[in-house]
Structure formats: C-alpha cells, structure tokens
Image (tube, rainbow, N blue to C red; front, side, top):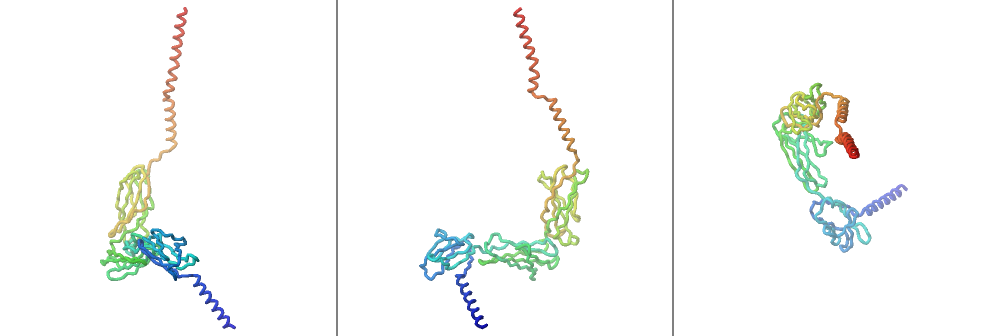
Length: 357
C-alpha cells in the first residue's frame, strides 16, 4: 500500500513539473547590445510565413523607420538606452507567446579615473575611481595595489561603492605604490594605473572651527579656536600646521595667516563693526598638500553698546522740532494773505465815502 501511494505521489509531481514547464513557454533570453548598433530579433516559429505581433514591455510595436517588421523578424536601428526592456513575439491569430527576449543596451567602460589619498597618515590611504561616461549596464571593478613588487591587500569600503582602503606597509619608503583599476561589463573592459610615492598623497581632512570669541573693548580682535580632523590618527606624533583666512562679508579679498603648533589664533586687524567670514585649512608639517577649507563661520568683533530707546527718543524730538519750526509753504501763504485783503477793503470803502461827500 505504501508503495502504491508513493508511486501515485511521484506521478502527480511529474505532471505538475511538466505543466509548469508548459505554462512558462520559451525560456527568456537576455542580450547586451551596444548603443548605436542595429539589432535583429527572430521570432521562433515553425513556419516563417506565420503572422506574428511583436510587443515591447507589453505594448504593440508598429512598423516605422526605426523599427522594421520583416516577416517574423524585428529589426531595431540605432538602438539606444530607451530600447532596454523585454521584447515578446506572439502568434497573431491566437495571441500565443512564441518567445521573449530581454535587451540591455549600454556601452563598454572607458578607462577609469583613479585617485588615491591619505587623510590618516601614516596608517592608511584610500583609492577611489569613477568612469567619465555612463555604461547603463552593470559594471564591475577590480583593483590591484602593489608596493614595489609586492601585492598589497585591499579592503572594500562598506560606505562607498567605488572606494577601497589600503594600509601603509612602511613609513618613509622610497618604493612607489602602483594602483590598477579594471572596469568590466558584458560589452568589454578597460583599465588604468597610477604610481606615486607615499608623501605625495598625504592630504588631511579640513579642521573644524569650534569657537570664535569677541574680546571686550577690542573692536578689531576675534579669537578663533579649532580642532584637528577626527580622521588624523596621531597629531602629537605627526603634527599639523594650519592656514587661517578671514575677510569682511562686504569685501572680496582674504587675509591669510599661517599658524604652527597650536589650534588657535587671535585676529588683530578685523574691520570694526563688520561681519567676517572665517575658515581654516591643515597640512602635515613636512609632506603632502593642504586640506580643503573648513566650513565657513561668521562672526562680528565687539562693538560699543548703544541703547535703542535713546535713539528712538532723539529721533522723535528731532521730528517734533522740524514740524514746529518748519511750517509748510502753503501755511505761509495763507497766513500772509489775510492782512493784505483787509487793508485793500478799507482803502476801497474810504474812496467811495469821499466820492459821495
């Protein structure tokens, strides 16, 4: 009995597998095609005279200059990224699906642009890479780093897609590092390499200005304090020097001061009463290049305090004085016209009296 049940189960399972394969139809094919090329898709029918309908992502394709329907074949001219999608061929009379083809349109990669930098000297450096033009299709990157003749392990950065981290093998080495990045996809591959000495890629991250203080009774002074970039591993053993720049907002020219050993500086030539922009950069005291400028901070030097109510009162008094002591021209004319009218009337009545006497 158990054997009969097992046999029946196997038969049912086999039927389900066959049905599944039958409903799935033809296996979907995938092709990668280069932008600008011409592509001909063939409908897999038993008879080349069968009438068929082509669809692109479900929409019926019509014959035009760029898409030619020739028998059961579809030809696409000058294919572009908008042509990426699924093409399906259907029997016209029944609507049955004959086959499906997925086209992914793109380009082979160009040579990657590679940049390496150490913001955590002398512990590690990192390399980044990018393509100057898009491929539109999945593209993988391989990276190889050598120190002299020795291959060095690379660690993919989990926070950045096209970046890896490398540890310095030794300090003050005279041997160069060589980094090669290869870009590869279904349409081709390309690579580029750069070589450098370790001290050429040292560039700290910008410091952070943490405080700008005014100094009482000093209208031309500002006290600026900053802290080292958190990525710099050991500022005591590998010290940084700093470059401070500042200017009033209303002017274009910057003032510059180089500061060594200490993360603070007092500006002594600020413009009185003007808002200033302040930034700072950092550099290893011996090797490498300057960091980018820090985020700008705005500050205004100390200015004498003037109560607002006194200013308003003075303005009000001045307005009253002007109103009371500066009458309008119209008022002057009215005030001066009245005596003239009275004297004219008196003279006129006197002449009439004389005539009647």
